[in-house]
Amino acid sequence: MRPVRLYFVSVAPPWGDDYFWDETKSDDVREGLFKALRSLPKPLDNDIVTCRQFRDARLCLTPAVKCPSSGDNKDAPPAPPAMANCAHFLRAELTAAGAERILALGRVAFRALCHVFGLHAPSRVAEFRKQVAWVQLDAKKVLLTGTYFPGNKRHRTYSDRVMRRY
Image (cartoon, rainbow, N blue to C red; front, side):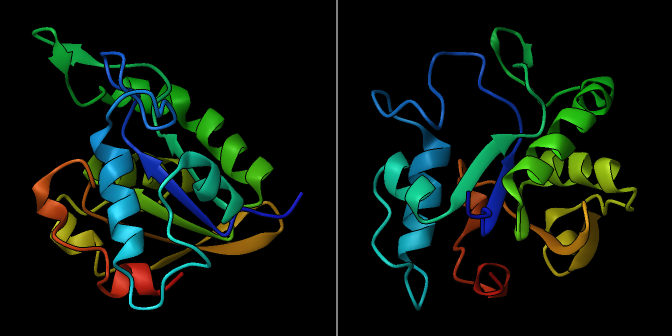
């Protein structure tokens, strides 16, 4: 099995039925991420428009927290204990995939990854998207950085220096 060249980490699975890997339904994260990948100056081998193409390009996405979080019957950021409880699962997934690079999609995902690797997490996305950390994953050093969550309009574009690094 070839290693995952870029491993995206999102927040948590949504409370409703829509989810990144379910192409039978619309998903803001999937659509935003695929659009961002197509906007890179030097696109991947092919345009990514399906989950199979995403996987075949040796890309992967997993939520930092493995169960949905809700408040008032809608998605809500997961509580710190949920992030802590899922940290070993997240690390195991990254290790099993042989991730070569890790990109946190949003503040919650970045904080969860910082918990996994014992790093300080800046409070604002604008701060941590300027940073690069090298983390130990199994026997190798892996680049970890973050950017805006692709399911909202704040991410602007991924063709910034964060995405160009991979």
